[in-house]
Length: 103
Image 1 (cartoon, rainbow, N blue to C red):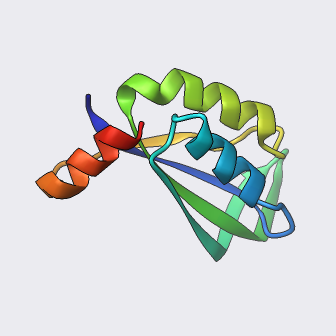
Image 2 (image 1 turned 180 degrees about the vertical axis):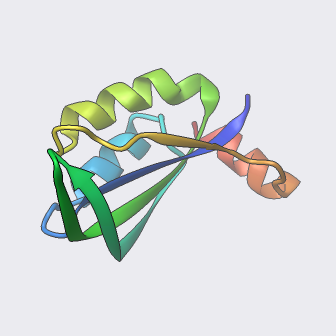
């Protein structure tokens, strides 16, 4: 199995706890880190937006991505959810072993 990190953002008023719990309980994520306050500048429907958001870092494996994507998109509040997959170049053996055992 190949460990990866998935990034997604949600608004600051969105309660991420049910989403994070569902991903871990379902076994599609080993861990979900929530960074509660980031600032995003982006173009949406022809307009420049400046928003505060929460960033979720979701630790998983490539093999679980289809199920993770389905759950995330079903529960995500945005019309177009961010779903960015980052390959991991280096990982301690102990952390890798734990991650693989958790998904």
